[in-house]
Length: 425
Image 1 (cartoon, rainbow, N blue to C red):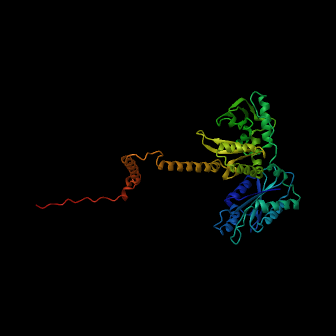
Image 2 (tube, helix red, strand yellow; image 1 turned 135 degrees about the vertical axis):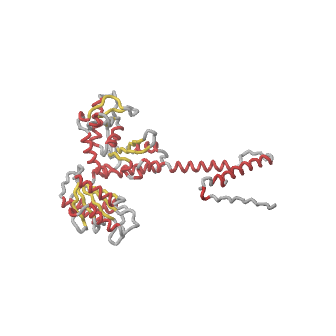
């Protein structure tokens, strides 16, 4: 069993995520713990009010939500009653046994799993400390539950997250070296069956490192309108070369319909593997790469390929990581706000910005110093001329006219007209 804990900012977001799955028919609310009504007798707002009644007792806490997913091995066919029992035991062991929580069974992946939503605010208004809850309380609870119910241990996921796993051993597709269809089929077959991706751009990020792309064509084209898909070889510059190969003609049938099924199944399956990628990125950032280019090079040494998404002006707006060790593809923002393209640039650039500021300060100091080599016998007039120039510049900078030229007309003090004195004759 694999337990994954997240701390969303909003209880509504966590509840919405699960309730929308229920509406689509891919999830079921099995249990409402410590509520006055049964789960099937409550609507969305009644469930939400059960959490908000406690959340309102603590206005200072910024995070009040706990969202847990418990993932079981595909070979385990647990009944609904057993799933609820496991959820109750788990929540009690991590300190949430007395809290209201909802248990949802999801059926949109290749393995059985449940989601649990709860609040961290207790009846007395205090907040349950969730710092390191995944590493401490949750890890201990997981092992005890595996032993108690004879569940399959989380060995497979743990092995994938450890270093030393051999990356995909597949030859890049090179146009003209082998038959086009065979080259494409080899690459697509490996990525389709072994990698975890949850969108077509993520699928393509994994394919592109092997010189292949899945192409839907233009939105006005026949292929796109008919939900078709072809695969092409890319040259060294990323241009499409050779004849396109229909998805339906490849043995693993990587057509759009089958890919979309993969997207849905892979979304929760990727969750346990995020930490390995995040840790690798954090380690590389600690080396102060200094630029995005250097960061990409360091990540390659950790078997992570980085794909930058840029607009026509060359501005970076997105980033995707292909972890060839865990065989997972992640958008930077999916890993967390700190791993989005903008956030990573901010984490890389501060050192460079500080250096530039330091250099600018040094240059300013040099400008203000008297020039070396000035002869002592310079005439007094020359010094006076320099002083007058500096003084004139200072006058311009601090001039009230220049500084407050935008003052509104109403605030300006009107001058009183002088009355002419009439001289009596």
